[in-house]
Length: 343
Image (tube, rainbow, N blue to C red; front, top):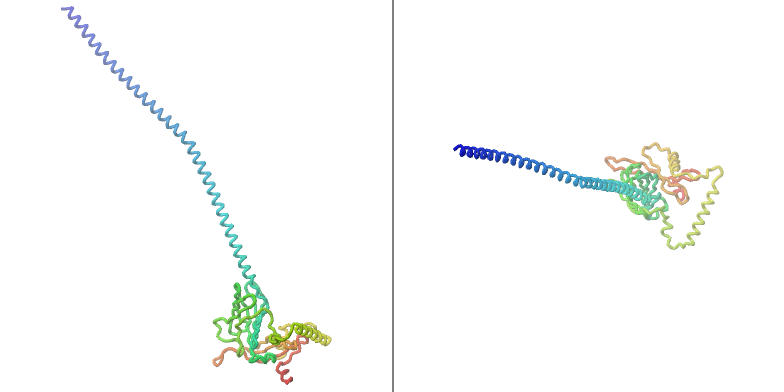
């Protein structure tokens, strides 16, 4: 019985020890497994960080290369902008220079000359242009009207004057001042070989004597004399001989000037002043105008009074008379008195 109890005790001890040992082993194995799991997780985290660092390091050169490429691109764009801006500025300067040259050439191409004439049998006229400054010049326009061609040689005519300042643009000049007070303004279109004169639409009167008008084409140069214009039978040799005879006559007349007299010819303005002093008129608005040379070579001065418009009449020129002035001696004479004496 004791023997059986001992064996049973030993068996119980073995069984308890076995159970205890088994539990310990399980705990140890569980702890080992947990440690391995943590180590594996840590290892994976480390590997993931390394991979991330590698990717970052691999990406950095790419980013740097892209940044450098962007910088180069920006530099190229800036240079192109500078070139475009420089081209634009140069183009603007060229356009401005061309415009200035075009404007200067445009005004420089138009030759306004100094003397223009309308050679019409009974209605001759002339324009004298002076003081060309910038885009303006001064001018004097004198027009005549004869009832018939025979009056041309006698000097009896209706006359009119336009005098003032004109402003031109291109080949068109427009009168902007009226120094005579004729009441009409004109425009002049320059066609190089001739000037075409037109009265401005605002004109309300002719501004001259009966039959006087200003419209028409004025050729460059002085008016050709009536005899030269109508004598178609005169040969070139006759014309040359006539010219030589005229030159001799002029030289002879110069030699006949009394000693002590001035050899300098009077100007047209001085001749006008001589007539003014000769008449000593006290009337207002009197005008003294050079009207060409007589066949004898004297200056013809036309005298008239400008009369303003009234209730009974329009503004007009009241003709007073013609006077001649010897350009060498300054002697003044009444042209009509000379005509009566010759008759």
